[in-house]
Length: 403
Image: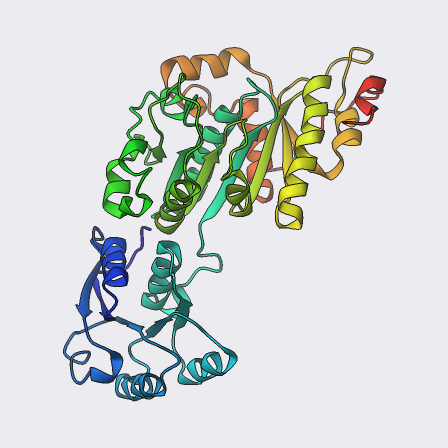
């Protein structure tokens, strides 16, 4: 993840070769952080840490061994409070946690440690307390189409652009296209998809930060896109570990992550849903699509429960004149609190943007499409937009029990 810190040193104390290698991978391509390793147990450490000029120390120890806990305590006394210490161990119990808190360690993590957790912990330790943002974790939005052709990819791309433009200096954004068979994020932006699934599908751990960077495509405005060349003839489910590793790295190194989900559910879909901050289901204003949206909401609630609160965006929303079909009030009656808003229908603008491989704002920055979407994505930063209301009742068949 991009940070505003100067080049600083992290010292790792560990004898776990696998953990040492994963930590080297996590920080290997960072220009702002250097890593030194001390391959000794904590009770074998003498003056190495004092001579390392470390800004943060990571200590990998066995919390069940009293001698290692006592050695950590001695190291902490020598370091005083000037250098934060992060403790990594295989297991915790109430006594261990209490001891570590009393030692005033900066953080403690349990193995196996994800790249995301390790990077965030180190970045927080490197920053001054006054500089730590209230929300330093990645902001993850996911878009799921309720049916084919509803414009979910367009809304995902434009959401990434909105988040990137409003994130402030130094913030980063990544679009992750998980539609490996029919993904279009890269094509919509006239970019070359570089994610080679064959390189990592049998060995997800091979996907480290450096390889991840190589497989990213970069838009001229700074947004990164992770997309694979489409394979229309190849319909198969990839290892859940591959998807988890992709999102783990994206969340670790980007402030905003926007996920474009396929319509088809895979074994990893639930994992992705549970890892999002916001899930948007994209629908259109037709009775069949709205009925399927109801089913989709039920499915999300069944697999994710209260952990996920899906919101529905009705794309290409046109409020018809009185007596001519589905109105906004009808949609609100059917979807209730799940309905978060509609996005205007501007067929020619969206098609021109797709054909030219550009963002909508490059053609018309004040379009109603962007205004509507921004009101949904950043409701606190947008003036209240006059609601498009209607009074016609929804056709009775939409209220039939969804089975």
